[in-house]
Image 1 (cartoon, rainbow, N blue to C red):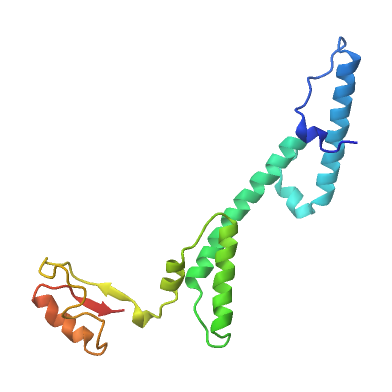
Image 2: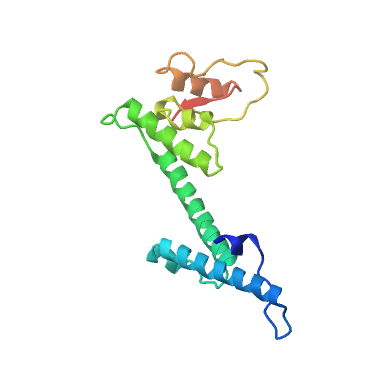
Amino acid sequence: MNLDYALRVDAPAALMAESSTEQKEVYEKWECSNRIFLMIMKGATTTAIRGAIPDSEYAKLYLSHIEKQFQDSSKAHATTLITKMVTLKYSRSNGVSEHILQMNDMASQLKGLDMEISEGFLLKSEQPDSAQVAIIGPSKGKEKGKKFGKGSVQGNKSASVTKADKASSSGTRRYTTL
């Protein structure tokens, strides 16, 4: 018996008094397959999930309702994973390797949901607060081509804030650590 016949073939037209025996056989085959498939699907799902899925008398429609329900829940799962990734901080109790494995696991789960996380994002989110640098003031155009100049955080961290304050008065960018 073709249990998936109701999924592969569209529902035939309703039977009439003038329907041929061939049309009646096709309809009965489809209707039997549809009924059995619905019983199997409804029996295989838990009552909690079954309550969230709208009931249908057609197997194709019932499957599309299930698909829609799980697409919505996968979006919620992706949002939860992203929030967890952004807020997860390294704790010394678990160790570095455990933390890296957690981050990679969440990134691979998101990749499975067609949401790829770049390696740059992972590295940026793992920087300690003291390593993140913010630009405070706009550039006046006097430092063309300069990557590191007066007040940059590249060299001495303890003097960077003092140099930054002096540099802001001379028209260069002002950097400070967060």
